[in-house]
Amino acid sequence: MTVTVPTAAADPFTATSDGDRHAIYDALVAAGPVHRIPLPSGQLGWLITSYAAARAVLADARVVKGGPGHGPYIAELAPDVAAAIDRHMLNLDPPDHTRLRRLVSAAFTRRRSEQLAPRIQAITDQLLDGLAGRGELDLISEFAYPLPITVICELLGIPESDRTEFRAWTAPLVAGAMAGFAAYSAAATALVDYTRTLLARKRAEPADDLLSALVGVRDGSDRLSEDELTSMVYLLLLAGHETTVNLIGNGVRALLTHPEQLSLLRAEPERITAAVEELLRFDGPLQSAIPAITSTPVQIGEVTIPAGEILVVSLLAANRDPGRMDAADAVDLRRAAAPHLAFGHGIHHCLGAPLARLEARIAIGSLLDRFPRLQLAVPADQLRRLPGLLMNGLAALPVRCDGGG
Image 1 (cartoon, rainbow, N blue to C red):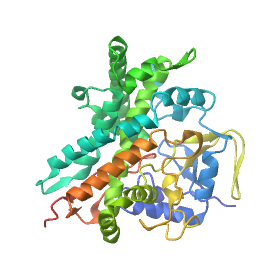
Image 2 (cartoon, rainbow, N blue to C red):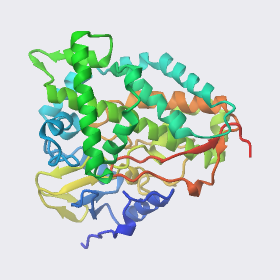
Image 3 (cartoon, one colour):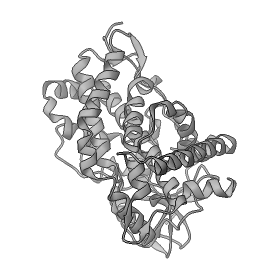
């Protein structure tokens, strides 16, 4: 079988015009379940695009993370900085992954997420108060971003006075190889330095927060090493807010560009739980799962991928695979529940998925309730996506909350 290698013009990771990324993935899905593709790192990898193949690969024990050392610029970073951000669960395989997830799960439970609902509602209401009467504004920077960064910082126990630099740090870290080494290295170094200082403070004066719990969490004689601890904070901080920023932004964009679906949700607000699931499927916050490596040859469709090759599972493409469901490229809040891969699958399924879902339900539901005339302030084709391998988010979402012209 001839495997298609997309040209640079068909690269989904650098596609930023709204609609182009999905169009590229739609064409790849139609062409087959697996493709040879250049990655932002400059390496060649294999992109998995069909739902069935993606789900199978995410649960395949022959497809491994391979341990630390595979992240962006890891070989070029200062060794102590690289070690401090690279030993997290998404880079590890069992038994290390199993041990870390078990230790973290003891502190980061579903109950902790559910207990945050009143606080999430209060933060949401305060942010919405600040949007009233403003005319045109960017919903990403003024609502979709500050809500989850506030929630994750409060959950971790990061003082409000320390949060001002986080956006400058997390943006290049999420962009990865596309940020350039200088920006990535500066952000990683600054975040590691801050994290180490904060951990020392939590050891001296523990509080009722997740970071203090992570410092003290143990399972028998086992506990997080210092590099595992800083890497876990790095992961929770980035994954704990960037995905939710994109979930809220993409979800609101989908509703505003599908007025019949928006009207349905306004008329039947009790649909919000199902609506969030359909929005996750239709235009999820993650473009791809973290790349993995074949430990032995793996057959996908008619293609045998050799051992030692990089695999990238496209969650975005898989969730809109027309072989999985009818009208997969349409948002339909009446759609019968259909499992999706927006939070991954298998042992690396997102630990923070319950919190992200809760934040999205509260944020989107409250936004629509507060502003019945909410609308885009620019034509949809002027919206732009951020380039990247992992994330699928908007650079900005200009809206008018009052619906005025």
